[in-house]
Image (cartoon, rainbow over the protein chains, first blue to last red):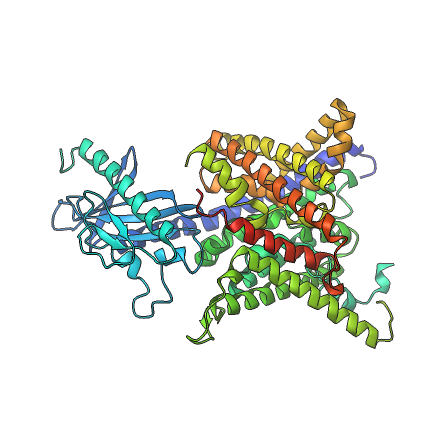
Length: 202
Length: 209
Length: 190
């Protein structure tokens, strides 16, 4: 070792460490990559399953406003529903919501907030409300069957009377309105995108 | 010089006397960020300990070959490698925990605790001693993270490790699982540790250990 | 998200130090004088900007095309460490006064989790090049802001009768808790 000059040794040792590191990681990548891809796909499938009625399979279609998932049954090619990921600003940061729509894209079949960093205990009620023991999922559940036109409205303090209204969360008005704003904007986008691809509204 | 210190001392010091978080204020970022629930604290502590142990093993084994001038570069490559291993392991086998810890697992790379132990200990001691030191430090780190996690989870969500223990009468203190709760809890814990050390010192007859 | 909102969010609403706990070490260690806090903040902002640019290029032009995303952490930390060294050498050559102000803080920056955190968040949130740079700038400004406010409070604290066991790290944490609480008031502005 002492015969080698210092710089040779530095380069040699660092190269050795890097090669070792690369080797370990390459091996580990082979082991873990399929598992991680599997979990991602499972998570996507579950989310789509949660917002759409029972279906046998789904295909994905790239549009200018993101990926549209088209669910069908084995018995027919007619779509039984559409799902897509809506992304937008919540109270403190980004919200990612899986949205399910009926085949004519006029009614919601369900929504599920997948990612959020809202205020725990208030804004997080858009996902689950532990203070409501009978029905902790009351907020996302109300969106089932809601009409998207002219627009979805979150109302305060009174019970919803129209088919495009949901009840906002007390103490988390901004989070509630953020959800409806994201839905209104992006449902309109996805309707346009689907229409331009020869969908039902063309 | 270091060989005069017993192996037991080498192991035990990290748990309380030289506890990385309480005494040296190292690794504060994960200690504050992920302790909104006890489970997250435990997972973070275990992942950090794994990285600490494997890096120490490798660095103490290579300590005579790594030239002094490039040691830091060598250390961070080794640390980052094991962090990637831990991160991918969680993503592949424990996806729920991986999702809740998010980017704080890769941030173990810059946890001063790990680089600090390599620089101060593993680069100067044999494999056995380095592993004992790392294990002690790791346990000390886990201890603090789990205690912080338990306190914040009980007060902030009324549960421990996800099991509800406080009944309906309890209104959770939301603030505890939010960032301010992390700072306040750690501040109070540090003060309590100071108080405990102080009183136990005076019982020993005022000898500063 | 518009670029202004992104900047505002990184600097204030989701402040790196007070809501993501990134860069706590210098926050506790360096923030004892307002003047040194300003210098440290400037050094960090500067390195953050360069890091945002370089790590974005490395990730999108090197790691993704060659499908070696698994090397993300190793390459990021190596790049950050080398960048810090280069910046230090460059500043020393170019400006002696600047080196005297920023230089001593630079070695500390390598293990500042805010820098690596910045690079990781950019990848995680799929930011475009411009967004990454704005995010880096916002995070740097937010870091400086938190550091300077903290230093100001600690200068006052030296004259305050802090309870014995809270002196040092304890009171710093309590003050940081109060600051984090205050910054929560900005939520909802984005």
